[in-house]
Image (cartoon, rainbow, N blue to C red; front, side, top):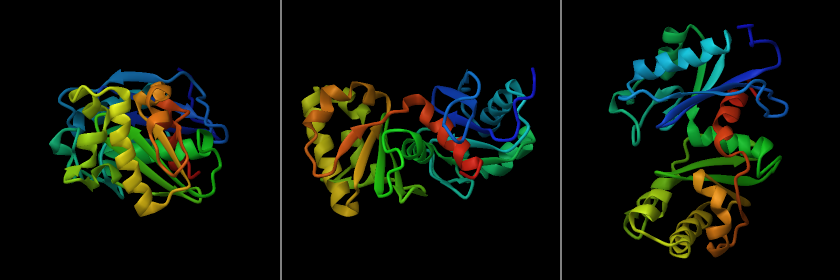
Amino acid sequence: MAKKHHKGLGFGIDIGGSGIKGAPVEPDTGRFADERLRIPTPHPATPDAVADVVGQVLDHFSWDGRFGCTFPAVVQHGVVRTAANVDDRWIGVDAHDLFRSKTGRKALVVNDADAAGLAEVRFGAAHDHSGVVLVSTLGTGIGSALVVGGALWPNAELGHLEIDGYDAESRAADSARERDGLDWEEWAQRLTRYYSRVEALLWPDLIVVGGGVSKKAAKWLPHVHIRTPIVPAALLNDAGIIGAALLAAGH
């Protein structure tokens, strides 16, 4: 396959619980420069097994330069600090060193919600917003990205706020809606409680809601009653790849 790494492109990889996806990205537009590749996430998702798949994605595109990579955990300067939804063996791993040794390329590893949040501010629902934007992803848990004046505040774990004696995501994530058999309006009441607490602490100018359930926003978003404007995400499953590529390319 012809080399796809040439000046002007970035490369992003999005590591999820079910799939590892990657594509070259045009940093000026956020568009993919080639069709993305998805490979199922190995089980168990150990560091070495995941790094091998990351290498396969890079090899598929003959990508030989620096790349960005999301990870579903707190990532502090490349070191994985939590493992809520991934293999415990990731805790304490320097993912930058791991990916470089396994793939031969430099990596910038970031929290998955952070990457998606940056992409939504650059190219999505919060395009070029200059204020305080919270991008909130509703899925198995609640991911959160805080972007202030276009700059990312990393690892804002706002899904773990304690509200009414509960870890917020245990009550308000999409998984909680399914577990408790809530209809859309009942779930929206829990989201109202959650986002009301967040806005009282941070006073955001805009909240963008992502995750798979954002495709069904018309069913529940009108029932979320808060002060802050709240809108569905625009980039959906591509946001992580785009944001990772932007961060790695220095954009």
